[in-house]
Amino acid sequence: MTKIVQVPFSKVPKLEFPELVNNVVLVVTKHNPDAYYIRSFYDFLLEAQTQNSKLSVSNRKTEESIVIQALKKKRYTVLSAIIGQTKNLEKVNLPEHANALSTVSVFIDGFFGKIRKDVSKIKTERVKQLFTQLDSNMNLQMAMQNVGLTPYLNELRGIQLNIDTKSAKNIEQNAARPKLKDTREVIAKMKLALTNLFRGIEFGVHAHPNVDYTPLIKELNELLTKYRSEIKAKATRTKNAAQADAATKSNEKAA
Image 1 (cartoon, one colour):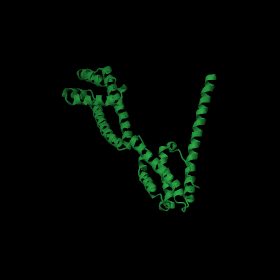
Image 2 (tube, rainbow, N blue to C red):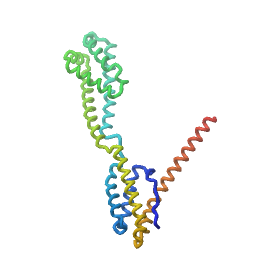
Image 3 (cartoon, helix red, strand yellow):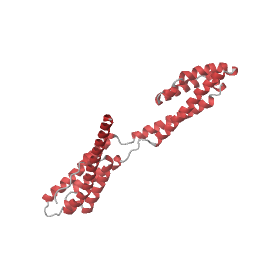
Image 4 (tube, helix red, strand yellow):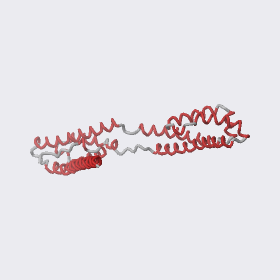
C-alpha cells in the first residue's frame, strides 16, 4: 500500500478541520514519525495544530450584546411611557400643569416625537442630546418635575448609561475575536501541513524501501475514507434536496 486516500480539503467544513488535524496527529504519533523519516512534516502539522482554537465555534451573541438588547427593549418601554404620559397630561390639561406642560410638551415632542420608529443609533443620539439640554436648563428640569416626568427621565438616563458601558465592552469583545482573514490563513496552513505530510509519506515509501509504511498508510486511509465518504454523502443530500425543491416549484407552476 503506497497511496494515501485523497480528501478534498476545500469541502471539509471549517469547524471539522481541528478534529481532522487532531486525528491525523494521533495516528502519526502512534506510529512514530522519526521511524518513517517524516519528522519535519509532522512538526509542521503540530505547529498548525496550535491554531485550532481560532476555528472554534464563534457565538456572535456575546454576553454583553444580549444584555444590550434587553436594555434597548427597556429603553423603548420607558420612552413610550414618557411620550404616553405627556400626551395624557395634554388631554387632561390640568390648570396647575398648564405652564410647565407647555414647556415640556414642546421639548419632549422635539426629541421623541417619532423616536420609536428610529433605528437604535438615532435613539441613542437623541436621548443623549435631550439630557445635554436638560442638564443645562434648570427651568426645564423644574417643569419636568412639576408634571411628574422626572422619575421616568432618571430611569431613562440610567438605562442609556448602561447601554453605553455595555456597548464599549461589546466592541472590545468583538475586537478580540479571530477575524475571517485569520481563519482563512489557519485553514490554508492546515491544508498545506496535511498535504505535505501525506506527500512525505508517499515519497518515503520509495525513498526508504526497507521501511514498511503499510501500517501507517492503512490507518490513515481508514480515517480519511470516513471524511471523504461524509463529503460525498453531503453532496448527494444537497443535490437531492435541490432536485426535490425544483420538482416542487415545477409542480406548483403546473397547478
